[in-house]
Image: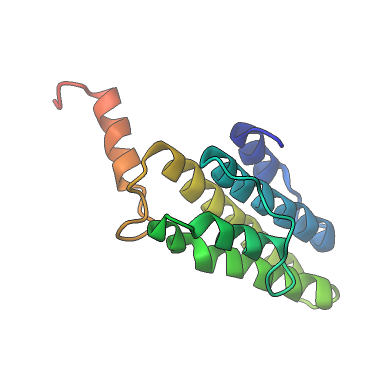
Length: 145
């Protein structure tokens, strides 16, 4: 399993000019991000699938005992949705745009889960990263000036 930092770089490196390749890479990255969450919580990532996607089974596994983790459910479902759009109709005019959207969604998933690993309360209200931004601001300006 790649490190979270490696996954962030991998997302940035995905090229959307080959949408099917991009979709496969981004789906795999999404799975790895979920694997980090499950492993950090002491679990063993499942090999099961849900609605045809391991990604969705991993999300389901990750929510056990962590209701706020449901905040990323729709993000995972969007990844599956765009994966299907791209791979089922790779010749569609919108396919490159769909790959770009899938890349943004993958980044959102990465940011939420990596942030939640830093701040457990992230997602209690929504997926806002305010606690992380606030902590960063305090680190940059410890006197609040």
